[in-house]
Length: 79
Image (cartoon, rainbow, N blue to C red; front, side, top):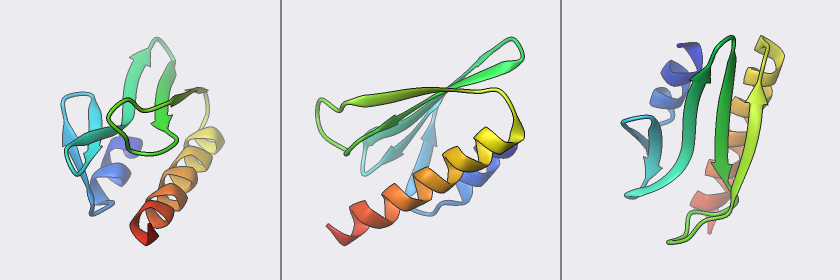
């Protein structure tokens, strides 16, 4: 829940279903599996993106994932 809220607060991202989009292209996908959360993040927002998949099992991994999303958003906005 906290992860979704934080990603919604990242202004350029828009939530649609279980994913978050940037300019109409999915860049983050989330799925709950039991006690863990499966997350996927694209390397760059493209028509056929390369996904990096991660399993987030604790709060520290969630924070690291959020930091990585914010870092990539900053890089993508510079390009």
